[in-house]
Length: 169
Picture (cartoon, rainbow, N blue to C red):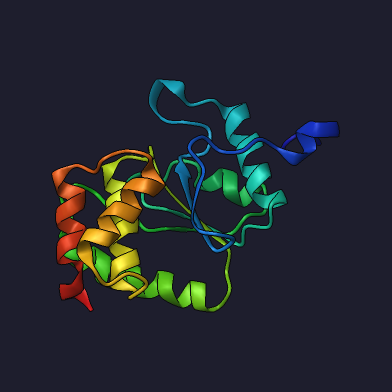
């Protein structure tokens, strides 16, 4: 059982690169605690506490490996593991993933979605959802919005995903 935190630490710390996609409904961030050599157990705990204290209903991890899942359980935060590896057929992954995400949001669940980092892979998937869901139908506009969310220009992979996602509807 994790130690009981007091004072300002009881509220946790905001996960790195935390960004709202849809205010108070869907957010993205890098893996709580960081990734690779930068991963820190204490930071992971503090970031998960922040998510819990800010009333997130669910964490969805798209990391291929089951990293951190035990920590979510230990801190009483619901999670779903939807692993996406480079070998996966992207369309086979996205069709049920977007449907599940859509159903969760229609059920007024407050969700945070994470990969190892907030990179083109995660941003492309989020931008694809924005277009797939019909919030923004124009592909150029969906790319511009996604680049605004990510704070940078998307790579070719992410742009292609957003351009072609309408085929999954």
